[in-house]
Length: 121
Image 1: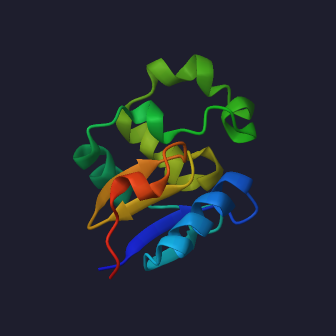
Image 2: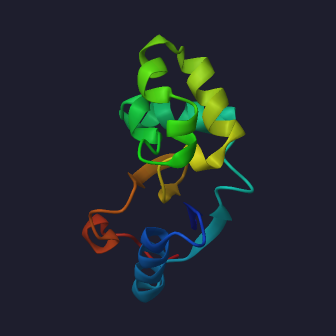
């Protein structure tokens, strides 16, 4: 099975992560997170299966996050409201996201993918 790689194509961090996947020879489907953000159902599944805090899914340094004043509103939002926001604006989502078999392997790109021991094909 291939990996799904949610990215913003002009993001330098996404470009670096994508280049590493290509160097490792890992097959992946690239999805533009701005034009095709993950929908609520997928986001809920990822959240429930990742063990990560909901806030880890948000691009807290992004313009959309700041423009909506989410720093002050985050604690008052329900999970449903937060997931709806993420699904509506892919730029709110921390990127890149690497997924395999419905599970998040990594959000953001600080640890090289080589450390994840990704499999080819």
